[in-house]
Image (cartoon, rainbow, N blue to C red):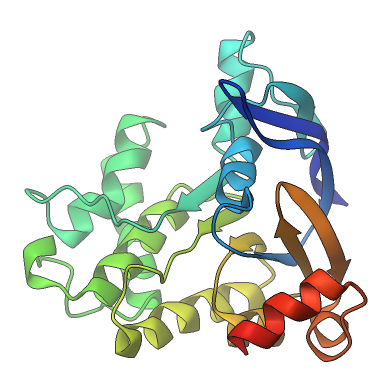
Length: 243
């Protein structure tokens, strides 16, 4: 089953064309990892998938429903199927971990507090923060904050999770705890699109890897192929520099 179908996406900022005519499909339960140098259009492409950036051309279809901002109510329902985790944690500093995780279902979906609280507590435990329900963000490490950000997205019960370089703002020793949560989500069958510089994660968890450069998809293959035997010279040059 197709979860995401991005067709002929184009995005421009003024006279700068970030990418043009890009297309991808993501199947249910698939983990798609996008790699490439900074400035290649990876994050902008990811943000176009949930219309944080509105594409200048092309279309995005989520579980058979085309994203169309003109149809407000239907548009919001489709958008809610996607959770997103960013480089920054964007937690509310005046709220506890539990309150941060509960906030979106309460305010956006208008769900009942007792139902949301029970779900939020389970998710916080699941990401390894069972001792931190009543802690404030100022008392958490970067890795813990990012796990709260993941829990916050999961509490909206999305069908798809998008990750935009979720470990790039973390100290190296904290990266593993966030990647561990992401691996467990993948093992549970969550559909995921991940922009990352963590090649070990891409090699181990991805079903498919896309290498982007200069706003183009240069190469697309299973991780064992792209890391062991890249077909394109540009892919090989990139991987030789960072592996």
